[in-house]
Image (tube, rainbow, N blue to C red):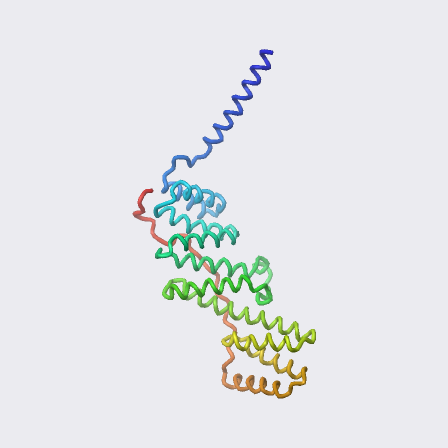
Length: 273
C-alpha cells in the first residue's frame, strides 16, 4: 500500500514537473520588444518562416504598441508571403493598412498585396512548366490589378509604382487574352453571337493591348458565319484601318522577378518598447 502511494505521489510530481518544464522552455519569456523583434527578423532572414511568424505574433501580443510592433506587423505579412500562405499575407497587409494608413511605408503593404495576388494568378505549376496564364481563372489577376492600381493612385511617386504599372500592363494583356479564349471557345461550338459579344468586350475594354487585333479578326469571322455581311465588313474595315495606322500594340514583356526586401525602414535609433 505504501509503495502504491509513493508511486502515485511520484507520478503526480513528474506530471507537475512536466508542466513547469514546459513553461520554462519558452525562451522568449521576459524578452524585450527589441529582443523579440531581432530574433524574429533573424529567423525570417534564415528562411525559418514559421518560427519567425510565431515570434512576430508574440511581439504583437506582448508589445502591441511602438515601432517594433509596427514593423513586426509589416514583416509578418512578408513572412506569410514567403511561407506560401497568401490569405494570411493579405490579411496581415490589410491590417497594417488599416492601423497605419499614414505610415510612410504603407505603400509597401499595398505593393505586397499586389505581388501576393499576382503570384496566385500565375500559380504553382508555372514555376516548373510554362503555361499560358491568360487561360487561368481571372479572379486573382483582377485582384492583383486592383491592388497595383490602388498603389499607383495613392502613391504615384512610390518606389514600387513603376513596377506596379508594368505588372498592370501585363495583367491587362492576360485578362484580354482570357476573354479571347472564351470567345474562341464559343466559335468552336457554333455560338457565334456569344463569340461576337466576348470579342467586342475586348475591343471596347482592352484597347491598348495586343489582343484587340485578334478580337477584330474573330468578329469578322463570327459575323460571316452568322450571315451578317455588312457587320463583317464594318469589323474588317476597323481592323484594316487600325492595322495600317500601326495602332495595334505588341504584348508587353513579362515583368522581371520581384525582389521584395523585408527591411523597408532603418532600425537604428528605434526606441525600446
